[in-house]
Image (cartoon, rainbow, N blue to C red):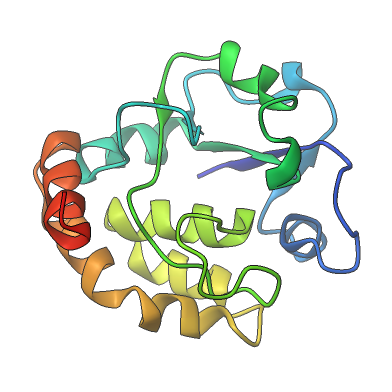
Length: 169
């Protein structure tokens, strides 16, 4: 399974979760959008369709494509979101990384990829990715109830319903 990250060079390289996982061989870091795998699940915070267990086969066959950029510049860097079809957003989760700890939906790239893997049922791989960070296992613990609920959903609509119930929408 491929996890390919387009790195927009907008972050503090010392704190960058993608670059660390790239050095560890867990992510492939690319600097050109043409290097993203065709047909991959594209993590897109603007997508109306949420990641769900029904995406498992796509993730296994085609992989995950993510954008590593500053949350402050995500709209400017979002050209990646115009290049693919299989866009998915993540449902409500809380960040555990030191930069955005406790902030809802402002996840690091590592957290976003791990959450995707967890939701589609690849929980061991999600745990492995988070194990590279001191705070990583805490991300999974902090969000365990929601991640488990999302991973039991049938499809994107059910994931969104679970999210709505949780946040009171």
